[in-house]
Every structure is written in C-alpha cells, then in structure tokens.
Image 1: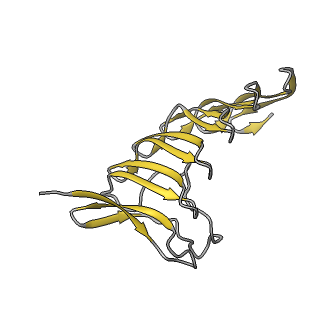
Image 2: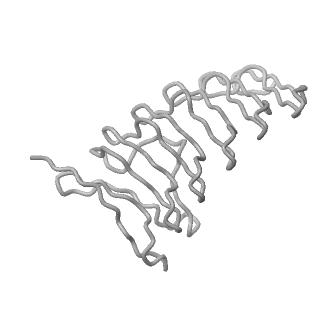
Image 3: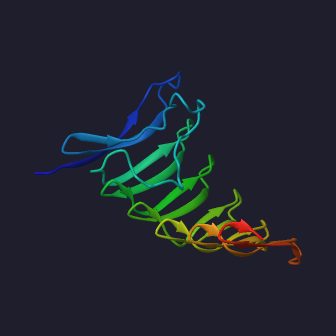
Length: 183
C-alpha cells in the first residue's frame, strides 16, 4: 500500500540553526525534496529557485506540494508537482506574507494568466504564455493601475510594437520589433 506523508525539514546549515528551509514530500518512505540551501555557485542567505525556468523538480517521480521559506520562516514559494513537473498555480510571497506573484504551470510549462504584484497589492505585470513560451502582450502597470509598458511577443521573441506610457496615459516611446530585432 502506498503511503504519502509531507513533513517540514528543519535544516541546520551555514549558521542558520533551526531555520526552516524546505519542505519534503515522502512517497513510500522515499524523500523527494529540494532545498534552498546555499550552493557553491550562488550567494549565501538567499532562496534559490528559477521560477521562470524549465519547471522540473529534482525527482521525476515527485508529486504533491512543495514550499520554500525565507530565513525568518515566512513562506516564499509554493509549488505543486505532477509527474515531477510544476503543475497548477505556483505562488511567490513577499517577506511580510503578501502575494508577490501567481505563476500558472501545465506540466512544467508556464501558461497564460501569470501575474506579479507590487508589495501594496496592485498588479505590476501580466504575462501571456503558451506552453512555456511568451506569446502575445506582456503588460507592466504603474501602482495606480495605469498601463506603463506593453510588449508584444511571438514565439518567445519581441515582435510588433512595444510602447511605454507616461502615468497620464500619453505615449512616451514606441519601438517596433520583428522576430526579436529592433527595426
């Protein structure tokens, strides 16, 4: 009979005694976890995850949820996995617990509807992805909700008009891209 248990690992690394650094999922008494412990090629005392990366976990059999924490113990990231790949809504939080980003994954690939927020809760960016490739308009907003910049992507490359706006709504600058190249 298969048994699933989730526990929090308390790791004592680099003088962070007692700090919760990662969750681990256990399936049939085998751990499948990833830690945000400092690696040799990364700066210390940081959380290490590539949220826009390939979306794979370290274990191909991984399923369920995973959390990463700030040193203070506050949750920084929540991910869900199916078949070892990020799947569903991933969340990123500021140190004060407020939502920083929602990323939508489908079997390891980013999808439409990904959004980032200012610390005060207003939308900062809206991203469009299809099967992990940025496609369509990506929009950046001022804190007051007005459009700041919009980029058009086709197959992961800038393609079309990119516009930057003043807070008043007037166009500040315009660029035209074709297949990732400024014209």
